[in-house]
Length: 285
Image 1: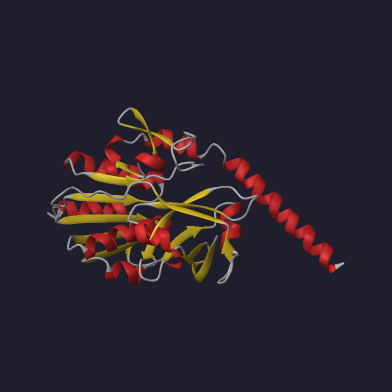
Image 2 (image 1 turned 180 degrees about the vertical axis):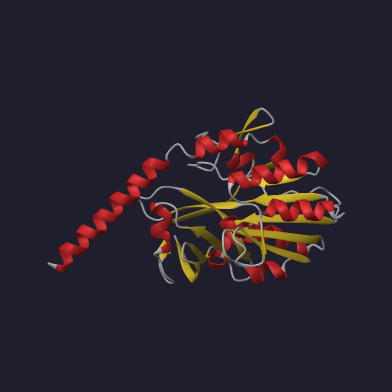
């Protein structure tokens, strides 16, 4: 059981929680994740570690309200507890040896996962360019944090309400065409975004890592739920990843698998809302 020590609402759908988890904080590295379970009735949900503080013994997670479990997690406050908080799981991000300049690309809430990558590389003396993409100004997160963890920071919005108008791939192509030489690109965000970042870098033979977050249950490779096809072979995101060579990932298969339970998730969320409404009416009467 872990206690929430800090809560910050980053935008209407994205929440930051810092929890006391000294054993995880002691061993965590950029790219790894945790699995939480709110209570004995809850599902197991993986979330990438957004930050950690070894001295304070805390781990930070940043997540979006997308289903019932994340809705309930976002409703918790400082001082509340989470029953299960297991990690660090997965393999740390491995940058090519000798890399001097890296481009870290984050899309939407995926920026929460891209941030520890940029922070770690920047602290190690690697030159880091960050491209962060959002639909509009009102959902921008971690702007100041990225500025502190990069040598060059580019903020893109689809509608042009903040930063530069355009997609992250537009900026990446512009930088490559302008003569910037990267040793590696790290792309984290919506699957279509990662797919097209890889299509942008592939003609240049530019190594591109992507962080995958498929459906997952146990986080130990036993259930096989998080299988992905990489280079024509089956890999498990929980133990072989979550980082993979983006040029080898079957993104179309990944998108199809991630959508399998979408209708069921929506039904469960609606059922929970109805139960809360009924409880509220019963308390009133």
